Image (cartoon, rainbow over all chains, first blue to last red; front, top):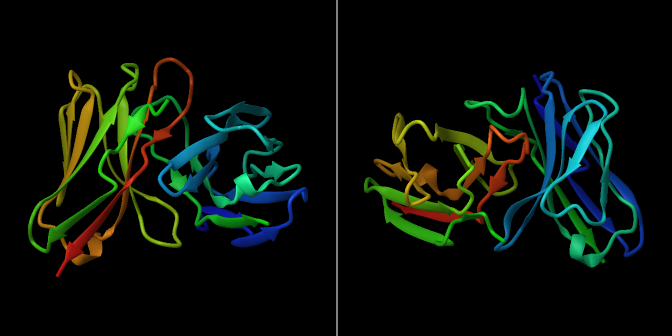
Length: 115
Length: 114
């Protein structure tokens, strides 16, 4: 059981380049989300999805796009990378949402550097 | 506007003693709280949770206390072990309003000294 899989683990981009961070889960989870972790800022929610075809913005959505065409996949797109997007990105999922006793399962992260 | 705050960036504790990590929140609609543990170069892993209908939840060496009137929760680790050295994040969510967001704090780095 792979859980939440993120690729790539490391990426270096130049300012203005685009790329997609991949996230896949094999647990049939309805809810998926993306966070970024920065020193002193903790984990901040970028975008989330409560099911295929449904996405919404989190705390820091600017500069990022998402889509959810399948239950399993939730890619995060950077259309024009900026140095401020240098961060560690985590994908997380849960079976459902809006219920007590749920918990998020996290991937191992993608470390992104934008030069 | 930081809705979930962990005001201690770091904490050092001797092995065998109690570790107490604190978390404050501002949104009175939050009704479910979680603690996560994170080792370097790994994703956060779930530790323990508590709903607002309780004021205490225990799981082995880990106990979470919730004070709703003060909008404060704490994680107690007894006894602390060197393997507990990690960054701990608290998180909160509102399960009733349909916002579907888990909001995390800034984390506390715990170092357990052998």
